[in-house]
Length: 414
Image 1: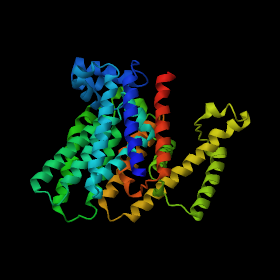
Image 2 (image 1 turned 120 degrees about the vertical axis):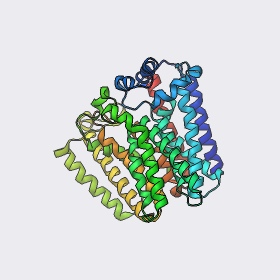
Image 3 (image 1 turned 90 degrees about the horizontal axis):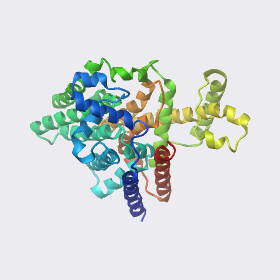
Image 4 (image 1 turned 180 degrees about the horizontal axis):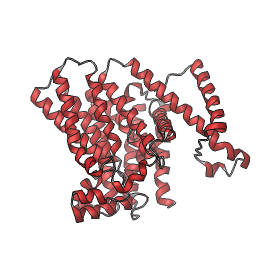
């Protein structure tokens, strides 16, 4: 019964998101105008060095334009057509999650479908899928790369097929990097697949082939830019490093995990006490030394809380998020140790954590969209910890509701 309700909830969530995307005829908003403007630049310059150097107000690479340009005959580069491309790719992401779950966890497709639907419970996915933004295409290609790479290293494959799959995986990975540069961390993360195969020359060849192919796709663009983003968007990395943005990314990753599978976390009385002590220490440090501030829901809380309390609220909530982030990282390391003999799982986990960590390199702002980039990997990692129950249904519904409200904020209050 719970499985049937979860199936209805997940499919219904996708159908509802598709419906409201069809009904959103508003012209480009938020970051959408920036990406559409560069579509017209690509029409003028083609996929050339000049186009890559003149891309303006766009930190992600040219994958967005590479996908939308040939679809002009369908979308006319108008809304909602441009947004529906992401909705189509979201269906593709769900399909790829099913294939990888079946492949890795050896379960049937129907059960895998239930786990794959967890992507709809990730609040950030609603925003990046219901708008013509840049996160969904690289998520799709990164999952495609994982699927082909795991097929390639499967020892039952012939050498010829293994090489072909590794080449395809590398090409897909390179395209993912051209969509969002943080995905480049998955290339070195693939080295984890060699963990128990140091003397396996075939495994080495396939992983190296994957990495070289991926770099061959994205390196020319990086060379032209002299960095990981267009030169006209260099302000994204101005200042070099932001530990606080990394902490926020891991905190949001923890919240995503709580929605999908809270049993990922190990908790008992001793851990609870440790978390309370950690919070108190961080709170004191933050109020008197660090002065990190973050104030979610501040506008609503200002209406019900005293002004004096609201003045310290941003400094009190920040240690909460830092404590959650530390707890998430510690739990991840614990789960990595427990599954230390599963190199494929460790590869997925390393990729997920590294993508979250790349938020440290974005210094001008933090966005939950950065966390959305790790959503597909998180869904894959949490399969063994997912428990389908009424409590799971409630969390699933809350995740979708938060996602809906987040998305509609852009359309109703712009």
